[in-house]
Image 1 (cartoon, rainbow, N blue to C red):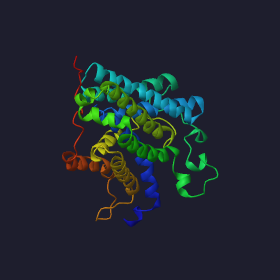
Image 2: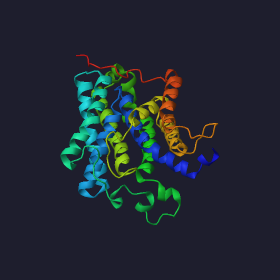
Image 3: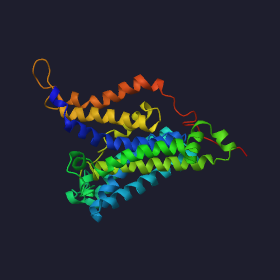
Image 4: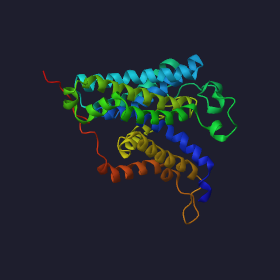
Length: 314
């Protein structure tokens, strides 16, 4: 079993944790403002499909990335309108968006590419570059050649979010409307405007996570390629107690479980010497998620106004 733990496992963990970090930090902005975001899975799928399609048509991964951010932001804005303006049930709305994007990309793919299963393969030179490709003068270390630009930016976003949340007026307002919107309103904060901003930001960041799956980690979009990562990101957000750095570490834990699963396939054996069935190995990340939620959800305190609609007094 010792051969499972290698340098390759570290870089595999980074790759697999990257989309979780983007989605979870996106969810943090929404939930800190008081809006439950169950739709991270759907937002990632919207970003993944848009990024793959636009990159294929334009030949530019940066155009694909920006398009993914815009598409997911528009979907998030729709969620915000339904949940904030029309006061729809936030969990039901998020679930509806997830169900929608399980099927919508397949329909659009069939219309644009005559294939409902996947988009066409994108040439390797048109995919999101690694740090080595972006910085040709960088040392020829594996961390530069194996780590994507989006993975490096994920760390910047986590640290930036920590600063924004605890050191800026916007962060103070975001946290205040998620804890006590009445008091925030009395202090002159426009509660619903801040909530709109939080939900749209969650869409932008989750879209980047989805784009990474299709043009960073892979070279095309396949149906339901997120495979539950949006829900795992939501679990990481709860495990991280709605704090940026802790949430990132939770994502790394889940990424490590996923990477270990890949490494174990064909290597892990039963005491009898037979290979452990691959189906049981593939269950590891989801079992870890369930155990973490079962063990820590009671110890995490959500923002007090999370899921609570706010009506300004007249």
